[in-house]
Image 1 (tube, helix red, strand yellow):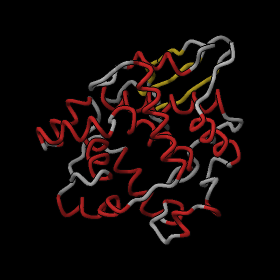
Image 2 (image 1 turned 90 degrees about the vertical axis):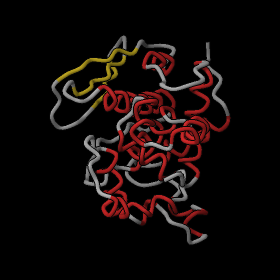
Image 3 (image 1 turned 180 degrees about the vertical axis):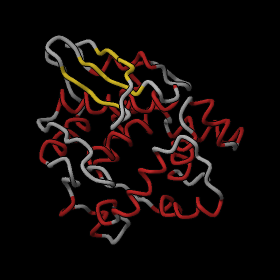
Length: 234
C-alpha cells in the first residue's frame, strides 16, 4: 500500500533530494539570507560552536562562557528547518504521546516496511550510525553514553532513516568540524521531537530550571539549554 506523504513533508524531501548534503539546498534563493538575517551557512564558526555545545554531556559552562552563544537567540532558520519542525510535530501526533518524555519505541513508525533495531556498541568515532540491511534497519548507539545522550542520538539517526526512505540523497557522514547541513537537520529533528516547543513553554513556565527540565524531558542538559536558548527562554 502506497503511503500518502503530507505536502509539507514532501516539500522537505524535495529540498533534501536536490541538495548535496553538505550545504543548504536553498542557499542561493533563501529569503532569510536575502533579507539580511542570520544564516547558518554563512556562519560556520558559530555552527561549530553550536555543535560542540549540543555534543557536551557535562555542560559545566560558566555564565560568561554561555554568553558566546547569544547568537542563538537571533537565529532565524530557513524553510528546511521549519519543515523539519513540522515533520517532528506530525510524527509525534501519530504516536498520541502528549507529554514528556517521548518514548523510544515510537521509532518503529519511521519505516512501515522494515523493522528498526537498536544496538548498543563501544563506538569510538561516532555517537551513532545507521545501517539499512536487507530485512531491517540497524541503529548503532555508543554504549558508554548516558541514557539521555543515547535518546538524542537515536532520534538524530531516525531522521536519517526517514530521509533514506523518502529522499533520493544518501546522507554523507560528518566530514568537517562543523558537520554537514544534513547533520544539522537531523539535530534539529531530535531537538524538535524530544522537546516540542509547546511542551517546553508549558514546563518552563512552571519550573524555570534547566537541570529539572532536562530530567523531565530525559535529554542532555546541553540540548535542553540549546532548545531554551533558541526559543528565547533563557
